[in-house]
Length: 217
Image (cartoon, rainbow, N blue to C red):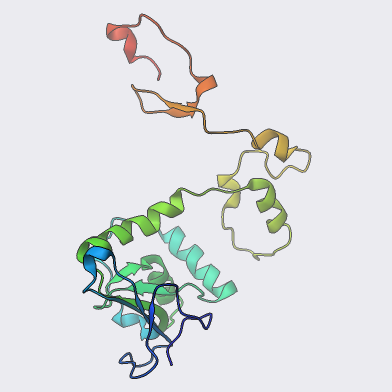
């Protein structure tokens, strides 16, 4: 019997209870398609594959730095490889190029993989972009992050959290809540240089024309 990792079937999916064709799969169910694609079913399976059989997407728009691979590999050393690599029916990677390189760096031969069958080429392209882009839209609650970091030990490896935080975020004398919980929804973008900042930080210019517009945005 093929079920998901929680032992239940995702809402709207069709359970496959016998005759599963996916050898080695530990998860297998049919995902519901959009109304306009009723005849096309999307299946999802969790299995183990040799890292050598995972195919990088040739037009991957993400630039993967050595620092990112090193950090991913260190995460795997400390926590194991918890996040499966996602591929299509041809084992071409949808999400997980950095994880693949980290596994290779660690000389790991087998990877946990989620394989999707039935996606259109457009859906694959969208997912490769959005799986990365949506992550960029999140941020840190630095006061909570400080508490979490105080309770764990990453050893000698520097995951570079300090570079993402305000200069004095890890100074115990700083009142984090009063200084960083201000609203950030009232922003403007400079039409000249594209700079984005709080509305209150923009100066008001009136009657500026010609070469005078080439000043700071």
